[in-house]
Length: 130
Image 1: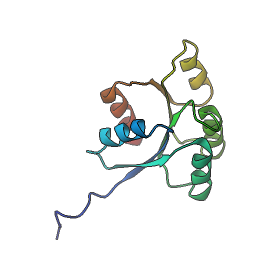
Image 2: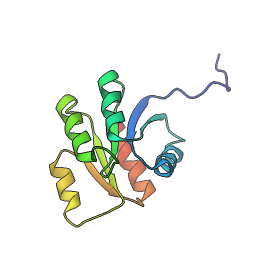
Image 3: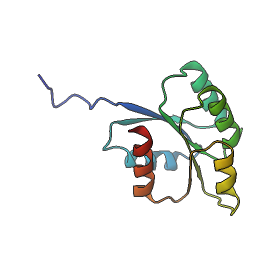
């Protein structure tokens, strides 16, 4: 029997590497009507530890380029060296004209600038997860 009080089972897990709590909360709100669970890593080293401890937990990663310890490029290089098929989405608040091509050349699958178009971001995430 289905209990309406049961939480909807989460079917996908996205690792969000983001040092800005507000940005993480916006992503969480954006994905609240889906079966996607978001796991928050507040910096690059936390993300690397999470990936080392539970390497098969994540279906995707969203990585901020500018982090307080190691940058998003280094995090992505680690992800791609250990999980080459894992999609990685770059997000950044400081766009430079060369940055998108650099991100895509360095292993990111997609690139979004903040503030991002939420419907476009959500559509992209769901395409990779389905």
